[in-house]
Structure formats: C-alpha cells, structure tokens
Length: 196
Image 1 (spheres, rainbow, N blue to C red):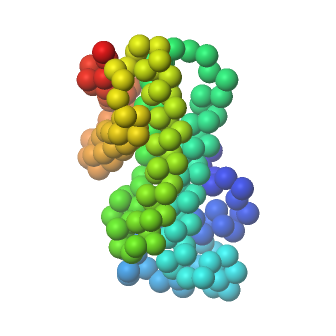
Image 2 (cartoon, rainbow, N blue to C red; image 1 turned 180 degrees about the vertical axis):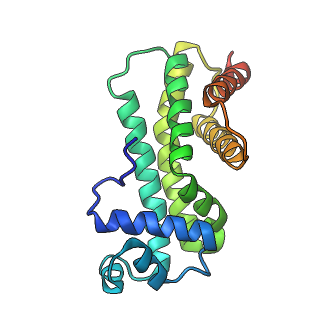
Image 3 (cartoon, rainbow, N blue to C red; image 1 turned 180 degrees about the horizontal axis):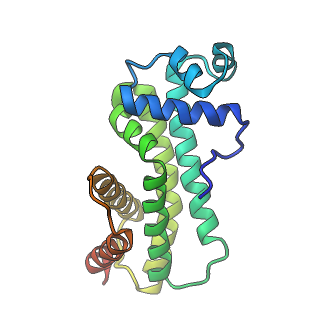
C-alpha cells in the first residue's frame, strides 16, 4: 500500500517516518530533534527548515495521519454507487488497513495527543472534519432506511472509535490476526446495533 504522506517532499516523508518511529519507541519527551534528523538521514537544519521544533513535528504527524486517512477513504469510495452496507464495509476496511499500516503513528497520537492544548485542539478539529465526512455516509444510510435515525456525528465518532480501538488492540497482540474475521465481526456488530 502507498504509505507516503500526501504532497510529500521526500525529506518531509523521511521526517514523518522517523518521528513516528522514534516517538513510538522512546516517547515524545525523550526523543530529540537531533535523533529525528539522524534517523531521517537529513541535516538538523533541514528539520528546522520545515518545522519550528519538536512540537511542530508532532502537529505535522497528526495533520498527515488524518490527511492520509481521508485520502484513502476518498480513493476507496470514489464514484461508489453501492448501498449503505457495502459502503460501511469499505469504511471498516479502510480504517483497519490504515491503523495497521500506520500503527506507530496511531500509537503516538493516542499516547501523546493529550500532552498539550495545541495537540488536543488540532486533533479535535481534524476528527470533527473527518466525522462530518463519514457522517455523510451515515446520513445516506438513514435516508435509505439501512440505519436508524440518530445524530450522525455521534455515530461517526462511535464508528471511528470502534474500528480504531479494535485495530490497535489486536495489533498489540503477539499472535497473528485474521483481519477479514475482525472486519466481518465489526460490520455485524455495527449493523446489529444500528439497524432500525
């Protein structure tokens, strides 16, 4: 799968990957800008060309992670004319694949996002935008009668949480995971609780 951040400059991609890996391994506080530069094989000045400092790098991780998720979702659902159950199955697939492919980034965001008000606000803004995007598919399902009428933002947040926490839980296990089975179980759980 394509793991490069959207509109990547090459060096920013390296910095994205290095920062995600180091923040996941050592934590945000214990990781230095020097270590990020070294792991990305770029000069320290290059880091400061793109970012004001380590906090700015973290905000970039949040921005890029959400941009990648939206890009994948838009690509998977471009021009799709299927009914709501098939669309929601695609949503589950996109989410599980994203959390699997970006395991380090997701762990870092979950562990460190609440460390500063700027991080919390940035993540909240981006999640609200994303919930509006997927909420549109839930609204369509409500209009089709495939989903009981309810607040689409609450439903989108619950759906995101359900797929994110499930993926991160199973990614943390040492044994192999049957992702098709997980996908089927999530879809059954979601529709079992959301059908009218």
